[in-house]
Length: 605
Image (cartoon, rainbow, N blue to C red; front, side):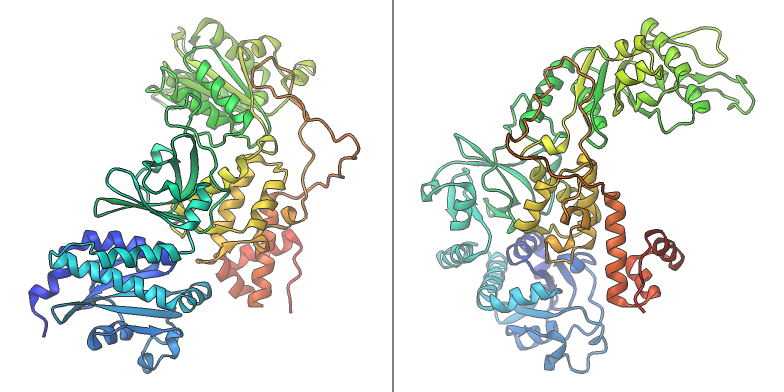
């Protein structure tokens, strides 16, 4: 029987265990579970990443076998292993493969480390790299034991084994000492960074690309400062025994992408992209942020007009004051006046008895963002013009105006010059809001930014949903880079969110998961250039190929609808039953019938 002191041993080093668990899972691309001798979970990843401090449910026969026999156990097909015969949960068990190693101190087993494959890809990875994986897990176990015995944590033998494993890893790895000097860099890391072996011994720095990424788990974009240049690399940074271990994503984007320095005057965390149009945009934003003058942002739908407006506000002296956004096209005309200007007590039938403060007044000393201002009714345009001229607002039912100090940032995807000619927009208001014009570039003109945005959205959506950061095949990356993106950044974000939801854990995103409109290269015609505006951001028009006719353009369905239709068709084909398909899709059966009718989907008999 195990003593109470032995039972508590592993709990004494739980922070070390948690740190190594994450590292182990990311190096080996397998799920990890660590338990003590009483089958109390101390650490884990994926489905084992919760319930710490609680005893495992079920038989846990493989883990019990490892600790009872004090020996390593491998089961490439877990459910067929003799140890699992007679297990009550055998048929419903999701574990496809298992490798377990005991943690033994002074001849007593105090726990176990297990690697678990939950997908076919993970099962194959474990089978193909069994010896190396086993060595790695035994190495981690020895570190735990040395920590418990207060022995030197990194013996020469441990170091040799650790560096050998890094050499054989299928992903880039860097090891830095406490002075940020490179102790070791494997061949893959040198290739991805565009360096030679002389990098070892040099001092470099690693940091998350943006402040908001500091301390995040999972793969994030890091800037590797190599002195004369910088590289943007996706990976994870671990602090181990005063040293830094940087493990690059096995599905790395292009090698050594140049990243902005922290003190770069063009650096704006919320604006992802380093293409020439985006660099010009960031420079312009920095120049105008300090001014109180009105700004008009134009560009196609989905180019990120509100993101730019927020960046202007954050860089301005008004950053600690309100940023009030209102979509002029989303509020009914009869409510727009009361929303913007507010009203007094009893101003009209049905009014709030206490009155209501308008959004213009709420933005006092801050920034008022008027999105889709081109859709504002003419009567409201006249009242807004008066606010801009006199800097005062009169709520409905009030007898006196109220002074306001606001900066107007407006946005539209409409051609306001055409609206003025058609009598839909006031020319005097146009000149009031168009003091500083900014035209946003469409995504198709932002060369090199698509990959940065893909990895930004992969990181954003996987963190929000709580799933593993997936890889992206070279073919899929090329196809996404060549697509024209009629919906711009918004369409790309929606597509990545869809892919993150449908990708099987452990797999990579390939062309088979892309929606039909992207596979066929379909696109909508590019939007004609906006009204000519004298601004430093305006880019020169692209020149047509001198001896080639432009390819015919085919109008595509909505990207989201195409994805939804494809997903429903694939699920129906796979399960062959509407009820089961609805359950697999996470929707009601009535909703599924409506979708089938909407998309005219042929249901297999």
